[in-house]
Length: 173
Image (tube, rainbow, N blue to C red; front, side, top):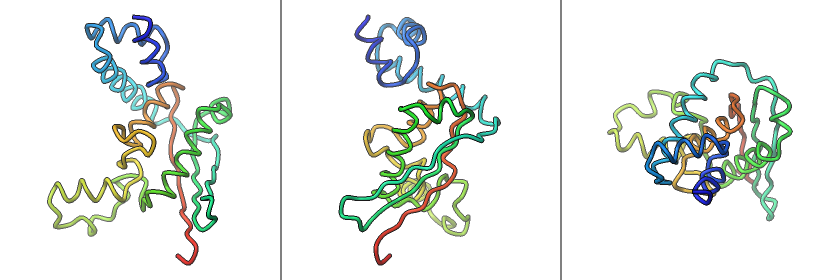
């Protein structure tokens, strides 16, 4: 039980009591408990999504070849969270994600309707997976989307965390 709780904490950032409860309610099945905690995290974020995010950081990533780079602005509710190493790590990873995966939009809601007009539902999903940052597979764990990772971080801090904007630069591009 202790190992399962430890694993869930590492994967989700939830507290010991939340992880223990998730395991108890899901017959000690780590995968089911993980799904349970992700849903709980999404619910927490939904409740907090209307809160203003006036704090945060701007993070940059420059590729070692120095011909590619990206900057992201990640906002949160408190400077306490903005200074947290896990929040800073998330911002750095999002800058790397933008540099590597070339998203054009943060979310599906930003895509102009005329771009996806006439596409089948599977073609739309593929378009969103490639072009929308939140819909992309997370670079460090392709079993998660960026949105899933963002949700788990928001649940961990119990704050609204928002990717506000990003820009990608490539030499000659």
